[in-house]
Length: 87
DNA sequence: ATAATGACGTGAT
DNA sequence: AATCACGCCATTA
Image 1 (cartoon, rainbow, N blue to C red):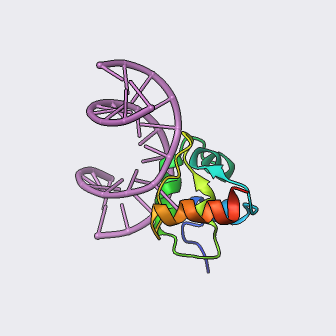
Image 2: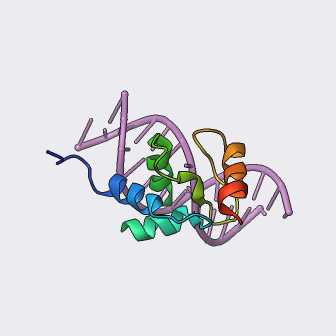
Image 3: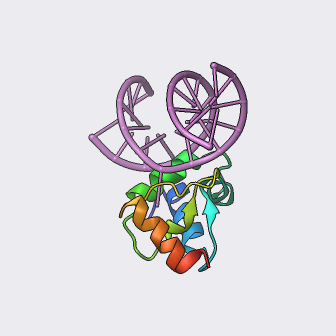
């Protein structure tokens, strides 16, 4: 069964997956919602390893307003936000 | 168990 | 405003 690390990783992925279109959250916010306030870095790590397209990880940006990174290219991330998110 | 890594955050320079 | 340094946390080797 799933006795694996089904805590933070799944929590973060679940939160990100719940982000609605046109909405953007920061890593710190996701971390807080996931149950680990202050673990923004860990959130990024989880997302970086996440190749699931079902998860709109491109809707997660930095707290300073930057786009952050993206597995498909940060430039692509900005483009997606402009096209699908930042309406 | 320890060390190294990384899509962060805030403060200081 | 931009850059550097330190701190924080979870995952992987």
